[in-house]
Length: 609
Image (cartoon, rainbow, N blue to C red; front, side):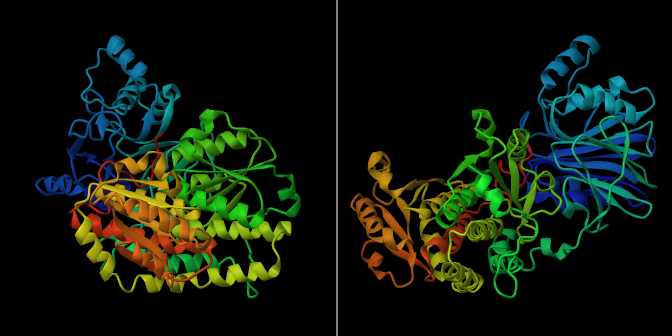
C-alpha cells in the first residue's frame, strides 16, 4: 500500500526522499508528496499521479533542507487528488504527517476537532486528523504530543511526523503497518520497506508493533507503548540492491517470471541435505505434535490463498491430514473453531498483509500453533509465528505476484512431504519419487520460458477479448483461479475461474461465439472428462486454449490452441501449468497498453483491511 520514507542527516533531503519513494513504486499508489524543513519553515509539495510529476516540480525550485518525510498514497479515504495526497499538516503548517493504514475512529475525532477546535479540514482523508491531533497536544515536545495523539487513535498505522519547532528530529510510530529504520553515519532513515533504503544503508532496525521511534541525525531511540526504551539488534540486509532492478527486462513482471527457475531451485535445494532428506530449520514439528493436531487451517489472501489451495491438496494427498483453506479477511469474522490442537498456516509474500496478520493473531490468541510461509525475512508474520518457512524468491517488485507464488507452492509441497514422512504415512519409495521430480522443476520451467512465440501470438490475437473463462478439474481448478487473477489484475479483463464440472450449473449460459476459454487438462485421471467439457463450450462457439502435458495430443482435436507443459506427476503440475497462464496475462497486458508492473487501484503489500 502506501510508501513511507523519512530522512535526517546532512544530505540534500529531496534527493533522498525521491530516490527512496522511487524504490517503493511497486507498492501501488496514486499520488505522492514530501514535507521538508528548510529555512525555518515546513514546505509541503504533493501531487496526484506518478512520482515523476512530483520530481519534475521539485526540479523547478530549490528546497535545500536536510530533514524531511515523503509518501506515496494508495487512496482509501477520498479520491486521488492533490489535496488528498500526503503529507498533511495542521492549520498553521508547522507540523507535517505521513501515514500508511486506516484510522478507524477518524470520523469521531474529526467531528470533535471541528466542533471543539473549529478546524477546517483541507482533505477527505482519515490521515489529516493525525496532524491536527498532534498539534492539539503539542506543548514543545513532539514525542510526547505524538504519544498523546496515538492514544486516541484506533486502527492500523505507520506514521512519520516532523515539526517546525523541533527540526532536529523525526518521530515515527508503528501499529499493524510495516515500518523500518535505516542506520547511517550521521544520518538516519525511516521507510515502509527495505528497498527504499538500500542505496544508503544495509543496517536496519525492524520496528515492532506499538513502538515509537525518535530519530535524530546522531541516533535512534525506540520506545514501547509505555515510553520505555527498547533494545534492538541491528538487522543486516544481505541481498543485493541490483536484485530489485529490471536488468534489461521491459518490466519487473517479465523479469520475475524468468527468475522462477532460480527461486524454485533455491527454495527447494536449501531444504534438502546430501541424501535428499528434508531439513526445515525453522520448523520444529514432531510426530507427537502432528498426532496432537486435529485441525489445520491455511489462511491467506489473493495469490497466496491460491497457493494455499494447492497446499491443502498436497497435505491431504501426502500427509493424510484434513485441511481447511480460508480467505484471511473472512477467517476471524466467522468465529472459526480454533484451539491448542490447531495448526494455523499463514502464507504471505510480504509478511505484512494486514488481514493475514489479524487472522494469525486471532488464531494465536485461541492457542493455535502458527506456521508461516513468507518471502521477507524479519517481517511481521514471520516474527509472530512459532515456525517459519522462508521462500527464496528474492525481492518481488511487480504488483502481480509470480515467482512468490511458485516458491510458495514448493514450500507447501515440502511441508506436506515433511508431515507425511514424520507421521510415517508415506513410504521411502514414494518420497524419493516426489523429491526427484521436484528437483526437475527448475529445468522444466526454464525450458518453458525459452520459446514464447506461440503465447505472444495468442496474446496478440486475443487481447481485445473482454470476458475470459478459466476452467479445470482437481488441482487444475486452483491454478485456473490463479491464472484468472493474473489476467484481471494487469489487463483489466473481466475473467473468472470455475470447476469444469460446474459449467452446466449456470456458467455455460454466458458462452457465445468468440468467448475465450482457457481450459487446464493436466490431470491424467481427469483428462477425458476435461475433453468433454471443452467440447461443451466449443459447441457453443467458444475459442478454447487448452493447457495439457506433452504427449496428450488428443486435446488438439477439441481445442483451438494447446499450450503444453513438460510431463510430470499429476500432483506437481501446478508448478508448471501456471507458467503459460502468467505469460498469457503478461503479453495480453502489454498488447492492451496497460501498466504491467503497477496496475490501477492495486498495491503490492496490502496493509489495510
